[in-house]
Image (cartoon, rainbow, N blue to C red; front, side, top):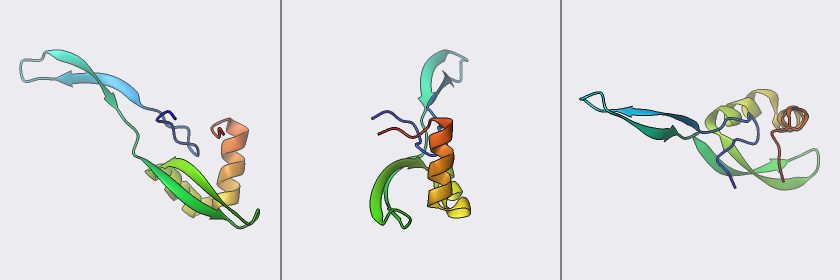
Length: 79
């Protein structure tokens, strides 16, 4: 699986490491991802999601069902 949040769609970004002498080398800024097992009460089942810290806050704010529906409409959810 790739480093993409299934709720918010956040991906790893690419940038530069800049040394003291201003020499630039490529690096990646990875997403703060967690593999979480959550209980989906509407479907009465457990699901496993690869979700970022921002995605966890979205789930806490809107609820799991609303967050999954929003992620599915935006195309972030993959199986």
